[in-house]
Image (cartoon, rainbow, N blue to C red; front, top):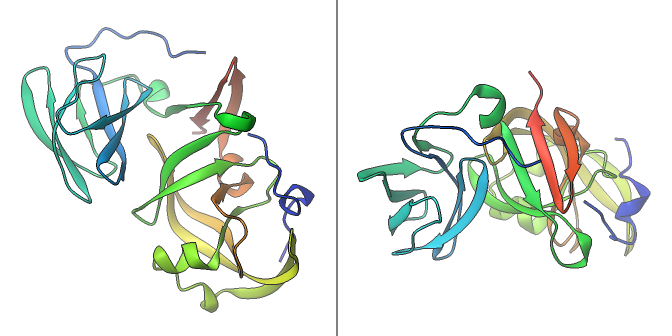
Length: 217
């Protein structure tokens, strides 16, 4: 197993607007369900809504479950599953673009999915692979002990880890199959890391306080 980046040891991590598109209705994707809120991408902009709220683009959240949302888009009511889309269409190059704002401490945090389950990622260009602790892996139903065992260095010292292949990893409209990952025993990393096994399959741009990811075709 290749060790993780030295940035993993102290766990000090770093992480253009889309052109406007004329469309009959905004393109809406249900990116994640976090408690009582839905995280949507509306024409490439990330919006977090609670039931009854309406985005600046006019998308209203009518109801929410663990794996779907009922949305009103341009007067039409649609039930959208996690990862599903509603509304108009954007050109392919723009559909596959995700903008992640810089958060507190200069880090880039974004909701995403692993094998169809919601997760919050910390973008880490210094990590060789997607990485998570074993508690996160168990919560996501990942049978990590079936993977290849190795050792990595964390803030707590040398600990065992397991190399696995994730069926799917997604952020916004970018969905990638067969993503390499490592599951680390112990509390670190406290958040799942979106490492280079995912990021290397995207184009990465910095635009002011945004990180822009575009899928490579």
